Structure formats: C-alpha cells, structure tokens
Amino acid sequence: MSTLDLNKPVIILSGNEFLPKPGITFAQQVLEFFISQGGLAHSPWGDVLLDMKGIQSDKSHGIGRIKAASFAAIKDVLEKGQIILPLDYYATNGKKQMTGMMAAPILIGDDSFICVVVVIFNLKERRLYLHETFLTEKIPEIAASSLVRGSSAASPQSQGSIAKVLQRLLKSK
Image 1 (tube, rainbow, N blue to C red):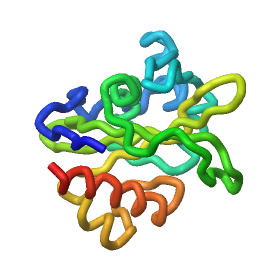
Image 2 (cartoon, helix red, strand yellow; image 1 turned 180 degrees about the vertical axis):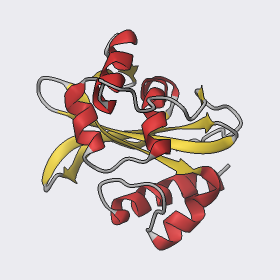
Image 3 (cartoon, rainbow, N blue to C red; image 1 turned 120 degrees about the horizontal axis):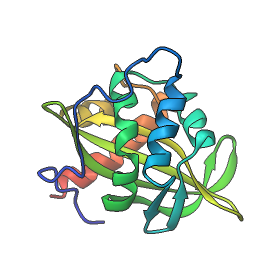
C-alpha cells in the first residue's frame, strides 16, 4: 500500500456546501449536485453510481456539517484517491458483500481531512454505500480510542478500524 500525500488535496471545499435551503431537502441538493457531475464516478473498480439510494444509505449513518460538505468530494475521492481496502467480500450490513474503500486528502476551509468512501458491488452495479471524513490531526486519537467526536459513521468500531488503516498509511510516509 502506498502512502497518502497529504499535501495534495483532491478537492478544496468551503464548508458551506449543501447548506439548508427552503423547499429543498439536503438529499435533493446532493442528488442535483451528483447529476450535474454526471451521476457516476470513474473509480479503479469501474463506474460507481452516485444516486439517491447511496445518499440515503450514507445519510442514515449520521451527518454533521463537515460530512455534509464532504459529499461534494465523493466523486474526486473515487477518481483521484487511493484504494485503502481492496475489493473483496467483507461483512457489511450483517452480510458478506463485495466492498472496497478509497481515501484521499481534502481541504475544508483551512482544515485538512481524509475522506473515505465505501463502495458496495453487486451483480448489476457499483454504488456509493457511505463516506466518512476524518480531521487529519485526529486520526491517531480515533485509531487509538475507536471513538469519533463530531462525526458519525456505521459505528465507532468501524470508524476506529478505518482510522487504523489511515494511520498506518500516514505513518509509512
């Protein structure tokens, strides 16, 4: 596994992406954004659908302002990031599913983050399952404690596992 180059964010965001707007839900805003990008990301594993099903699945794992803004980074992470979990069968949603994970550094405002995107594959398609955004300087703390403050994903244990992979990549640099 090669290292993540933290000096080269794949995208720079303001942090104000997808702010609340009257008459349009957060999910609708993100879907419109994904549609404006073509609705697909061209990952090393092939095209990944960026659609409402993926948004809803991701959103159901919890969302704060940073994670909300980082939806705008998903396509860039899938297209320009690094594979951190090779495509294989892993336990996801209580069953073994073909999944893979990509990560890339992003900048939100003045803060550096690592954005991780999990993709689920089935016989018909590849689709976004969830993404998580970690403040780069907090990765060692997250990996050590398996707890995340100000961010949420499938579970603290899964975040801790992701953070441990990221920490190994950062240390090997």
